Length: 355
Image (cartoon, rainbow, N blue to C red; front, side, top):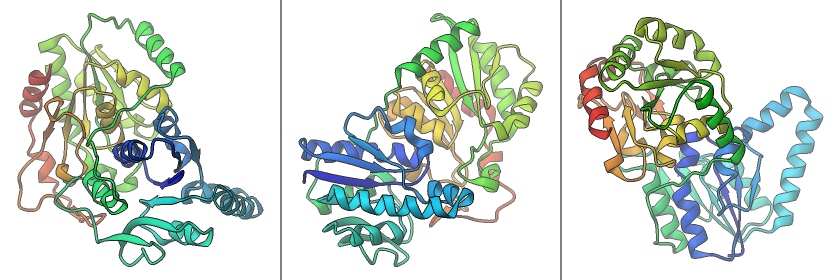
């Protein structure tokens, strides 16, 4: 197995979950060259992984953006992708995409060993597969372990070790200095929103804004901590509202002000990360930062942070209707009791324990 391809076109958290798989492949085949096909937005997560030799940006999302600008450029990019994949002549491909398009191209270019998941009959072009309708009862990375067992790999560690680029470390150092943060300060990161991966359904991940604001006040009062608020540019209004309710000068607004790599640099310097389930949470866990996370409709047993469990506290409610995110679909629940019933003191206790 000299040339290996891993395909994962998804977002930040999903990519972090593939780190144990990459490590296991490299340990088993130390002389192999591993390429990773992904979307270009997650490059900062992967580019410093020394087990990966090359990143290939041929995701459907990237191709769609090219198509919107120029149909001719889109066709050229597809031809380039097929030609490059065929030219590399892979010995093994692990397709985590859950769709048929990638495995079809793998078959087309002559990759003989094609492993992946057969979701809803989409694994027709895979040579070895695990049939599933969705991830259930165990963590995503354990499904990846089961898939590697089909390859004949049984050495697997359920943890991820992310690395931050030097320029992003420098950005983080400057960010701390410019905001008067020192090594003596307790600095806590807060990702209170849903991110972009769920689109219009992101609100279903939100623990109520008012509760985050009251929690922030209590953390600042009890520990004298400084809080850095994270989020995307689209969440700017939510961030301003949270800061206004909390009414504290100890909250630093970094919402929409960093790239993904710069976000990683800042998170690496934190004493603790607090947030809803999403990409920043998994970045924190991958960087060895302690986390307190709040899970509502999503099952923490499947999508929770990986690594040393003693460093991560997951807050959730044991309700009969939860989790309602199943088989990659969210229910139409509007009540969101699974989030509303979590109170600030529960989260504060977890923060205190980890600090």
